[in-house]
Amino acid sequence: METKYELLKVAYDNFGMQGPKSLIKTFKSFPKYIFNDVDDLNDQLLDKHSDHIEIFKTYCQLKLNVFTDLFDFLVKFPEVLRFHKQIFLHRNVPEYNLIFRYSFNEVSTFLRPYFLDYYQLETDNCINQQVLLTLAESWLSRININHPDAVEMLRQSDEILKSILDFKEYLENNCQSKKITQ
Image (cartoon, rainbow, N blue to C red; front, side, top):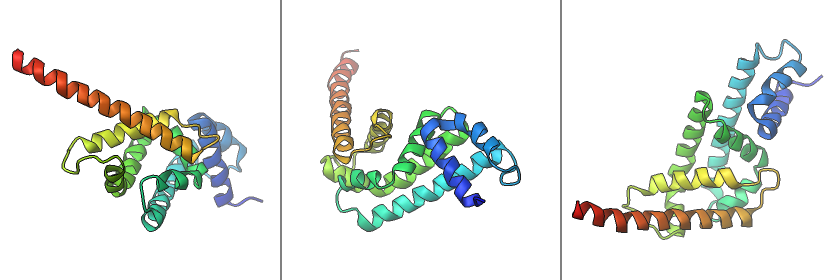
């Protein structure tokens, strides 16, 4: 007989692969006394994900030397990465958006200095937090969660940030001149 912990791991993996649509099927496959209902299963999965985010953050705090290490670490946490992408893809559900924003804030606060250093961005630029969020969202929409590859994830990060900064520069150059002439 599987324990509640083992069943929660199965549900976490199923959610990571199939998203919220897996919840009902997964719930029905478990003994009825394990979870009260689908909402209880969902809540426990979100708690488990919050715990994983804390573990990942702690791991990064202990081991991260440069921003590029982040991608090597993500490859070591494929289940968390898959689950997190599903959370990202279903942010229209308020509790998923809440956990997505919470995890972004938790990890980005720690990663921000490494991000700024790697991309040689000004530390006093208030737009950098929004740039980091835009980068994270764009990056999550592109990554292959079935075959995470650190080099490819970094390449995508570099490519996305270049596009963001090119767009930012375009806006700064073109919008400033229009404001003056209006």
